[in-house]
Length: 284
Image 1 (cartoon, helix red, strand yellow):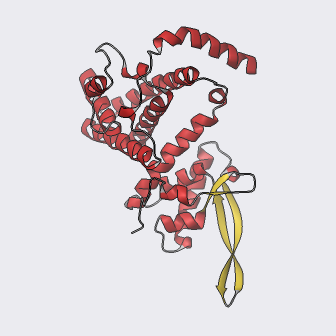
Image 2 (tube, one colour):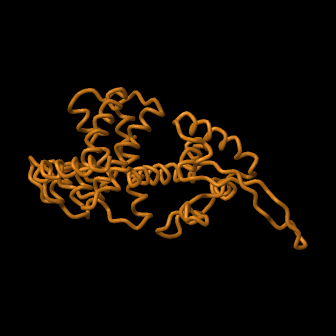
Image 3 (cartoon, helix red, strand yellow):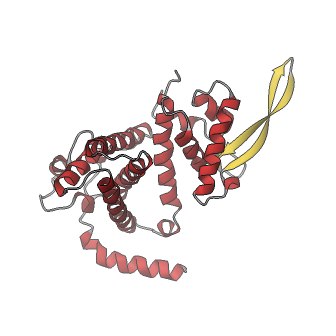
């Protein structure tokens, strides 16, 4: 079995490469070895499934899957060309979603690339890149999280989480996974918040981003696995939160319960919304 985590740097991060323009990519052959495919030919069908998923998502396949040739030694100093492929982070994400699910390293890859791909998407958003201050980033992410929480609630309802009390329990499972066992009440206590204060309104941009990853990945998993029972939905939310937490730890980040409490975003909302609206309008 591959050693999954020898240091805080994730094994998938260790095999990442950069081209002459400093664009990141992964070698398909190296990724196949990490995902424990005995031969590259067995890995090719997974790549084809990932390409199809890429096409169905509206992305250009060539932007994420680039054919390449590498020279390898075959003995006595001789070399021969072998086919390979340069994969974007999104391509790797699609590949691990279509790889053998029973492998532990595949599960690790699904978490890593899901979280990192979502992070990259946020950081590459045109609107996000126009933001200069922590206040603006907080407001942007808080708005994104509010929208995705609505979508998560819909997905949870489809999974059998119907009553308000059931949804509160469902949400607590996500928090407990991400916050090392702390539910909403315990997070309030840990961060010295008042009972009527919303946890999300007092998060900085880093903590909001972690919770955004939790919400989006749980929503996708509930839909992808067609979960239709509330206890399974609760377990799924907890497991996703726990995996996001593990990824933060592997990347050397601060655990969310240890991040500082921010001033209420409600105090900033009106002022920063006007400023943000003016900024994005001027860019158009």
